[in-house]
Image (spheres, helix red, strand yellow):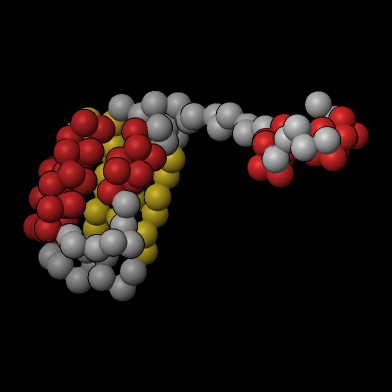
Amino acid sequence: MNQKTVLQKIAKNELTAYEAYNELYPEKKTKIGKRAFFIKMRVKIPEEGRGLNTFLRILFAIPIPIMFARMGIRLGQRFIKSDEVDFKEISRLLKYSKNTQISVESSDALVDIKIM
């Protein structure tokens, strides 16, 4: 519907302002990303010895299924009491975030996460 007809309907009291807005600007459908199945992690702690870094490399050698990561988020929700973090939204975003890479570098550790 074009602007002129919407304005005419508003003038005749056939439409409210809210309905007119919805007519002029309909909601666009958001495109959902590709579904992820695995998470591959690499963790390195420079200050620790070679033994701990080898253990972490062996622990995260096999990609983790996304189902276990989402279960971990739900489990973490029980222990973290915060209104600022929406765990359901994080879980949904994790499910549809294929081909995402996250790199965290700090003075304590280096973490690389690849979602496949």
